[in-house]
Length: 133
Length: 133
DNA sequence: GAAATACATCGATGAATGTCAATGCACAGG
DNA sequence: CCTGTGCATTGACATTCATCGATGTATTTC
Image (cartoon, rainbow over all chains, first blue to last red; front, side, top):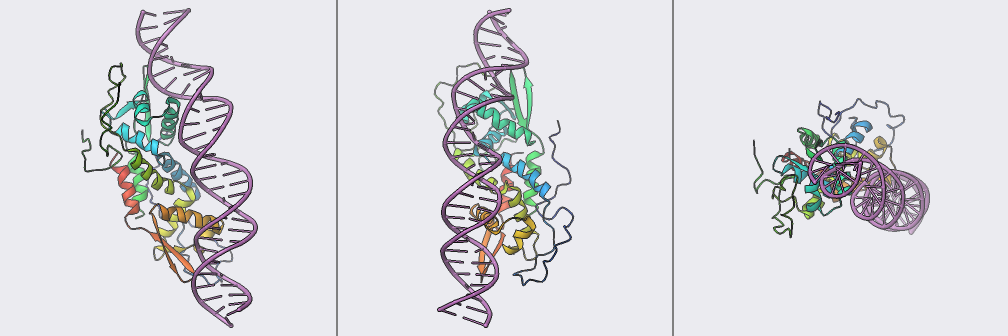
C-alpha cells in the first residue's frame, strides 16, 4: 500500500528549484517581465495531473460521491453499478483508476470488494488548488 | 462523527433530489444496504468533471502555476510558451480550455492577451473535494 | 467436487484529447 | 498602405480514454 500522497503540500505556485538559465532570452522587447519565479516542475505536474485526472470524470465523481454518502463510508461494486447505469467491468475499471490514484481504498471481504475513501487524499488534492488562489 | 451532509453543503456527497423510484430493486439479497442517499446528479457530475478536466493536465497545471506566481498575477502567451517548451498554438489551446472552465480570465490589451486567475474559481473547486473528505 | 456469485482482467472499438504546422486576424509602427 | 508582431483558429495526426462483451479467478453454498 503505497498510495499515500506526498507530504509537504505545495500549491500550484512555485515549488521546484529554478531552471536558472534561459540562454538568450533577455534582449528582446517583451510584453511583460517573465517574473523569474520558477513554475511547478514537470514531474510534479505530471504527478498531480494523474490525481486530478482520476477525479475528472463524471462517473468517477459520482462513484466517490456514492461511497462518501454511503452508510459505513464504504460500498461494494454491486451497489455502484445500478445508480451509475454502467456495466460491472466499467465500474471496476473506474474504481481501479481511483485506487491507483490513491483516492480510494479497496478491501476484499469474502466475495465482496469494499471501496472506501482514503482519509486525507481529497483534502490533499484540494490543498493544491487552494494554495494558488 | 457521523456528520452526514444535509442539504446545504454541496460537496461530492448527495446534492440532488432522489431518483425516488427504483423499480424492482428491493427483494434481492444484497451485500450492503444501498444507503438510500442519492448520489450527485449526472448533470452536476458532468459540470464538475469539465472543471477538473481543465486542471487535470500537467501543462495546464504549470500554466496556472506560472500565472499565479507571476509578478502582477497575470501573464501573456509569449511568456508562457518558453517555460513549457510548447508551441504557441498549443499554449493558446490550453489557455482557452482553462478560460472555458472558468478558471482563467482573458483580457486583451493592445497586441497582447493577459491571462489571470478568476478569483474564487480554484477555491470553489477545492471546496467540492474538501466537503467529501 | 459442482454450481453460483462477485469481481477483475482482456481485447476491441469508437470517442475524446494533446500536439503541431499552416493560416487567419487584429493591432502597432513605418 | 504595407510590414511585422502577438495571438487565435483550422486541419491533421497520434495517443489516450471510456465503454462493452467475453473470459478468468476467488469464494461461498450445496
